[in-house]
Image 1: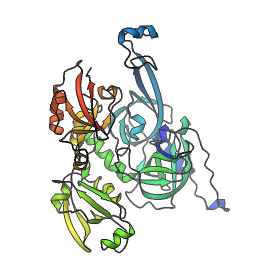
Image 2: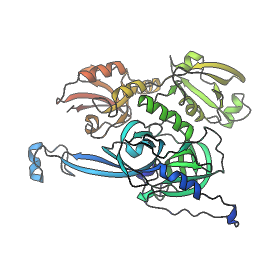
Image 3: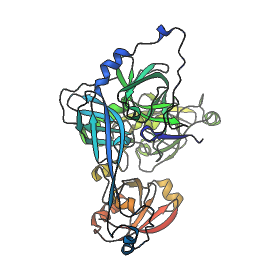
Image 4: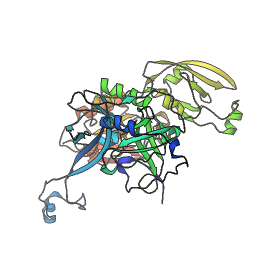
Length: 460
């Protein structure tokens, strides 16, 4: 069976994790007090997404509206169905702020939080960040039990950790294991890599998503997010978002409702043994800069293709993925020192971290994107060159049941024309979208995998 990555909430069947215990059972830690102390601050999250079907299932979209009544549905009729899902979360403040995964609440029309004492509350989304898969919720309650967030660093491979959540809806279940690795790089479908995941062999299953991972001191060290599976259930490869990422993301969500990340403007790759030798490195390490965006913070700081970043902002860069993990946690405008190896010599360069393109526009668009129901950003120079594009904006996210979704636009398409107007970049796109009329088909030209396509889109 083919292996695949997927969020915990989307996987299938339960797998049994067999743990080999040492002969001396007394050598194992006692988790009873830790679980008793922290379970009241762990919550179950139930969500409902309302899906509207505009035509009978299986009916081709080209069937004219006037003929649809022959298929048992009058013209223009809509049918609504409710999709339910579940996950976990935990309370971080007594006045009702709750942390969970973005994929637990993504697209939800109703969010209900259930406490261990069986009280239930409707929750609102304070903010969500798909890039880190974190979300912050708020319920109207006071005096709630809370968890303690652990230190940013200090977690070690081999350390015992405990997860509490609601796998398969089995409320407040606990499972334990050890940290298998730290700093794991798992790029998203969009190729983004901002989270240095904690890998553990703790049994994590559907419903555990968004729940806390505790150290033996009863402190949250991570948020359970993904598993690697062949069976659809846990096989002992679980991945959690580390607490230092959680702290930074949650602070920004609470203050601004969004997350703005630092940006350098470089394309990087790992260094193998042959490259290390040719670049004057003692061993394979660092992030090799393959390309620098013109006008980017990296270009302004003097970084060049061929430079190998071995340290950034005081953090050692061992693998290429360590660089976006470090830069992404910095705020635009912050200064950092980059230690690079250039032509066999080490240099220190001061870098002022910039704002990741598209972040400001995403915030302005709101929780459901812009009028088309998408989030978009400028096209990078490499894609423009490869596809010979004069401009355009790249679709990074499409919201369900939006005009763009109904028009069949997926993430990755590059919009270059609306109506008769060419799109040079974000400014053109924002102006044209704001001027689009409602209930009128608009010609849309976009590129998909380098191929130019015309279609139409209509705003309700």
